[in-house]
Amino acid sequence: MAAPLTQIKSSEIAFFDSHGASNAYDVFAPATNQRLIDIFVRLSGLPRGSRIADLGCGSGVFTNVLQQRGYNCTGVDLSPALIRIAREKYPGIEFIEGDIEHLPFADASFDGVLLAGVLHHFTERSRCVAEVMRILRPGGKFVAFDPNRMNPAMYLYRDRSSPFYSSVGVTENERPVLADEVAATFRAAGFRVGTEFQSGMKYRYIASGALRWLLPAYNFVDGILFSPPFMKRFRSFVFTFGEKPEARA
Image 1: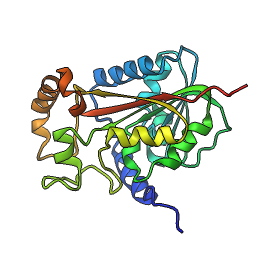
Image 2: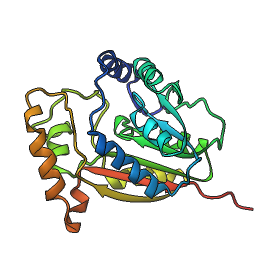
Image 3: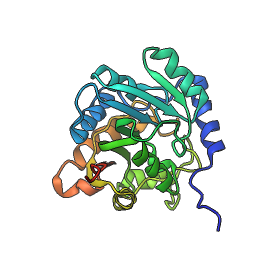
């Protein structure tokens, strides 16, 4: 039986290389970039000096914020163009062109892994998760965040089953995630797993020029509407986090 399709690599590379050519794929406001790394630090509990792999690092924005916080970072991305930009912008950080499903690292070589907007690019996630398990040391931590399919805006705009779906600015592999499905994949690989939901992540850019004028209103409403605790499962982003168990004696 053929292995399940995980990702059409060629479409991912073509899409992100095209953004790399214009140096335009930093979609969040700077304060949101900092907030996302605040959440990584809190959920992972990793101290300064820990070795972190930023998988799917793009042009290195989050890798750089992590490095500024005192972590020892390596960024990995499938796109040669984005890796080139990352190296030019942040010459003090190691960036590697590579496939998350086949990472060029030794077993147990990292203390932590960040998967920033990565998992929703995979139709089948077990290979990616297995590589995260492999490269983490026992007791190592991961944090992933992805758009939440339960969020009305994410569903209506970015899910193929929506009558309002827009393919502008996304690859053919992408789909917002369901929190329980992502958590189950990490648990099946042997991780201890938790889930958190967040909204109020402010965008500075979306690909659709026709909808770009709505960004200020979206940023405002998203930060207010889903703030009550009873609305948490409908917030715009799912954060999945966890730990690789310590080796048994």
